[in-house]
Length: 247
Length: 223
Image (cartoon, rainbow over all chains, first blue to last red; front, side):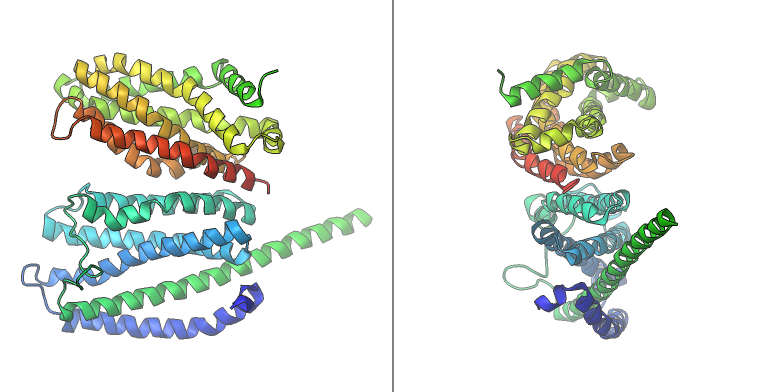
């Protein structure tokens, strides 16, 4: 395991894993979408608009899982100052922002026919919006600080401060009376959702997770290469300077 | 011989009081924000008195943040931050002292001025007391959270706007409970002390936690 903490070994591993992960993602995503559209039943109240759930719920899970992964990478940055952790952090922020935006947009599209409004300011929606803004802030921070190691430490601190929002999102539907429904899949006493809907949902969730892992690995690989390129161009500039000084 | 921390405290207050230090400026900014709002939404006194607490809180939030980007920026520019970093006094305590001085210089005047500005927004006397108390309890949390942003963006060019983008989402709970305690003062279903206690809790928690994050961010600048 420790062997892959070396960026070169990690690049080799990522190169081998990415095609398999991408293939599995494509397979499961196709299967999940087919199940969603042709097999999963319409809701007796919501009709076919319930199918938005198969995109909304996985993106909501991913928006939070991405932050948790980013937080563990942030701990890696703070404790071990490992460049791989820096890259994992940086790669996760835009992905998390996209999944959160997807969650907000699909939720809004679902809310219009079901609740009669695009948006309400209840605790769940507001806390997810705050999560989205935190992701945007982190992206801004990454882009503003030029020195990569310094940017990683600053982003790690902000990530660790922002992690208070994750339990607030998770439990917002229990603590406050929200228009958003409470948890129905992961709860005591088993899921409160019929098996015919649960299976397509779980397959979509696994597909989204694999999609995230694929994109994250690719982005980490790009970030490592970008850092090497930066190092090489700095070295080249130094060498040029030296040769000019001697000439 | 004064202790280093009290010397720092008085230094910060002197800087804030001098011209361009930002102490008086954020009060003027607060005044302008509050007086611009009635022009934007119209001079309907009923409406103004209903949303008065919200106006005052938003204005206080922005005015507090406006001055905060200078909390570590000036010290980073003139090199005194490096002296503070190498001092034997713990950096966390230095952050706390700087924040307390900053709060006294910029936020406390807002708290004191808020009832006067509330009068122009046709707010009831109980509501005026409520808004002052809620600002008194809530602005320390804004200063402490802002200190994290100020530390993260110290030494960056154009750090001010980035700092607001980083910190404003985190201030959402403070704003929610600040406005709700000001609203609870004039009646409503929730007793006044409940949002007030939560607001004080937010301030105390950020006072306890934020100095560590801000100090870590300052150390991360050039470690």
